[in-house]
Image (tube, rainbow, N blue to C red; front, side):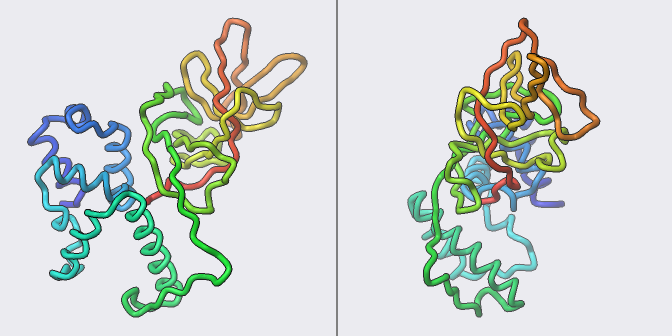
Length: 250
């Protein structure tokens, strides 16, 4: 049984359903769905820790069986949990850097000395990401409370104000299902710019098109038809899409 299956079984035994667990725990249902879809490796450590605490499950039992966990490792985790959020973010950044460097040079992480570029420092900041908000294909309601704060680096544009997770394939190939679009908050976009809109209560990521005095929301995937904007529609611009990246696994 996989780690995710083990957690799901515990949730059903104690709370009967994932929905009930979401209500009791305060963890957004979209976050839980993402955890079971993408796996624990794609979920923030703090979220996994909270789930394990509520289920009275030893988090160390979820670590792969082929990895030997020593008393020193347990002691390290205990010290990590006592850190504040900023300190935890720094530990995560350093850990990811060492793992990527060790993999590139085909050496064990424990034997690799981290050497940071002399003229470049790691930039750590927190960005709000709406995890289940905008659809590239079919509309979904934009819930202002349905977000998580993630520590991000220089891969996220500094002019972006927040991120929104995209669901659907209508903006491929530029924006894939599950990507995060980084949005600059503004109440208007120009023609041929990609933005996030709320159309009649549905949040959509589309390109705005103006033709002969009429406006349309266009998908980049040609199998989807343009959505005409009429005088009877309610349209609100959330902001302009600056960039898109894979969902951050911090």
